[in-house]
Image 1 (tube, helix red, strand yellow):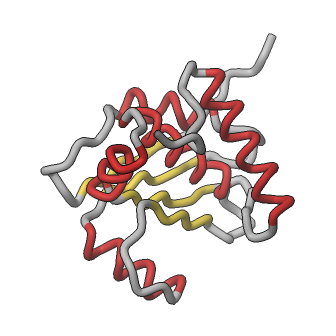
Image 2 (cartoon, one colour):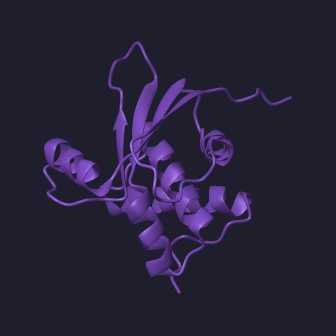
Length: 150
């Protein structure tokens, strides 16, 4: 029998006016993307356009707003991390790419969770491995391929 996956999830919302999936569905996406038994706690933080731009500039030296930022906790005594999402951008991208909103949101959560577990896409080989895993996890939930755009 497979051991039940467990993780503590905190939801922190700094915005109110944009669509955000329910905490129940986000938890489902988080649990399906737990590949390794390395995470015990994750903060899901919803922010506006300006705040994510500031975080991106301060931590990654990129002076533009982005859809999501992932911050693993590098403390060896804890297994946690933060996922900072900008609902305005994620919802705009879903429309722009011709994707169902739930697919775009699921992709962003799964992508971020994989980053928290050590997956990267800084070189082609790692990117292809990560994308293949994302597509598999999304397909397991009957979502489409996030890399196929209308």
